[in-house]
Image (cartoon, rainbow, N blue to C red; front, side, top):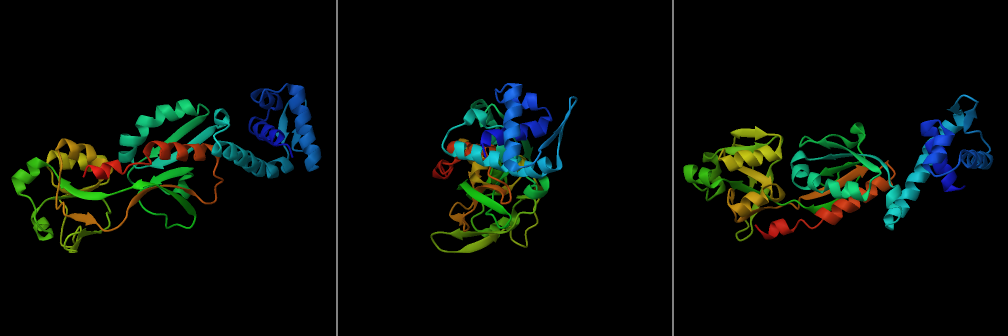
Length: 304
C-alpha cells in the first residue's frame, strides 16, 4: 500500500473532510478523492461513507485507523532516525519532568527545539512529584531512577551524582560535621519520601545511611528547587543532585558536607517512554535533542 495514501486517510479521518486533508498534503480535491478510492480498492473496504453534505468514517475505516496511524508514525520515525523529514514531524508531545530540572535545563533550550521542529507542540507536566506515564497518557518522561516497570523503556541521559551540602552561614552557626554521628546534632532538610542512600568513604571503606533512622528532619520538601533555596538560606544540611546545586557550589553559597563520602549507587537521569507506544517521530526527535544538549552532564562532577 502507498503510505502517502495512508497518511491522507489519517488526516481525512481526523478532519472528516477529504478536500481539507488533500489541501494539507498539497493535493487537489479530485486527486485526494482518487487516492483514497485507490486505497479502498486495495483494502477491499469502504473507509468512508460519503454524501453531498458530509463524510463519515465507516466501521471498517474506524478499525483500520489505529493501524494507519502506526504506519504513518513508523514512517516518520524512520525518516527522523536518518535526519530527514524534520519539517513534517508534527503533533503534540506530552512530556513529564522534574520541575527543578526543567527550570534549569529544559525550558531554556525549548526555543531552539521549537524552531527546529515547528510542527511539534509540547504539553509539559512539570512536578517533582512524579506522575504515572501510562495513567497520565504521557509520551515521554524524565526520571532519576532506573526503569523497573516492565511496561516502560528507558534511555540513560546522564549521571545523577548526589552530595550533602549546606550554606557557609549555617556551618558558621552550627559547626561543620566531621562524622555521620555529628549529623544527629544538625538540622536536616530532606526531600519528601526520600529513600535512605548509602554513603561510602572511598579512603576507609566506612559506610552509613542517610537519612539515618534516628534522624528527624527539620524541614521536608517535595520540590528540589525550594530545597536548594532553603539550604542556601541557611536552614540546614540537605542531600541534593549535583545538577541542582552545582552553580551554588561553584559560587560558594553552598559547601559540601562530609566531602570524603560519596553515594554508593550509580544513580542516573533516564528518559522513559511506554513500551506499548510506537516510538513516534516526535518522541524520537525530542529524545535525540535532549541527548544532544544535555547528554554530557559529567562536567558537573568535574567541579566537585
